[in-house]
Image (cartoon, rainbow, N blue to C red; front, side, top):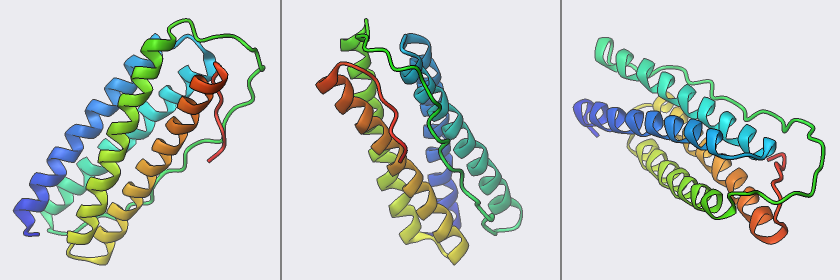
Length: 160
């Protein structure tokens, strides 16, 4: 992948990360359950971190042609919540939100995996592989939430 094409791809995924962060922040406002709300707040913060790192990468490539040292970010350990067997009042809309979020995470995972294969150096390869892995983690967290909501009617946050 040539540098201009790599920059174009970075600009696109950067915008996707911004949109995902905004979407997750909005979802956190809609979800009433404290576990669900916290999951989406953390997802919003994580995607904002990706946006910031991609902005740094874009600037570095424009100025020096070099990739950056991406350290990644760990998803926080689930906080301890009081277990209350209560239904999510907006179950149908919440399931839709989670389903759409899962699709976005899967697309992001695949996009970063493709970018890794086209990276021109090991640092760029490592950054995109890590981003792909982090998006997969988000998908797994959402998949667990989807399963527990549809099968048990309650939110859970399982440590990945």
